[in-house]
Image (tube, rainbow, N blue to C red; front, side, top):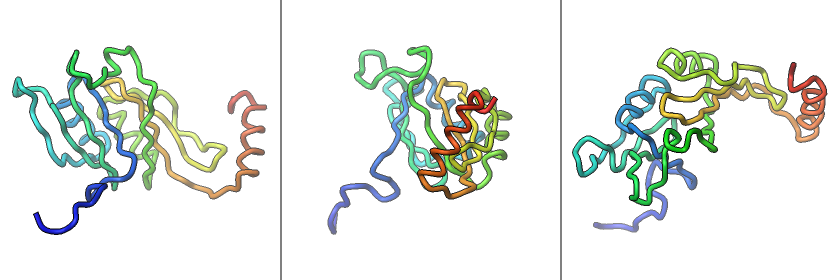
Length: 161
């Protein structure tokens, strides 16, 4: 192989989510339908059905994923854990459209699309595999001071209520 190998492969960023999923093959198909994901590669597990490793791309970002393999040192899926402590954030041109697309594909809305105090149009869904996704479109640039003032007003109002 000629040339110098890049320490960060082409198409990847410094931080790349690596999701463990119970039903990774079905999840890939869901992410295609819900978020317009592009499947880059899929390596089947030893049984020929499970996913040992796969890569998808949403927009300009890569995501790695695999089925959970109990005892395999890969971690557990949100299904096994009965929830997720991580939320994957998507910045897109039209958050409302992607939110609606995800819900139509089977995601559960957990926070409706709202104009937030930090300047984003923002909402959240949970996919059928237990992973949480926030979806946003940045609408307004704000200084930290402006965000602080808007946050105080938001909290004073009972978190927007």
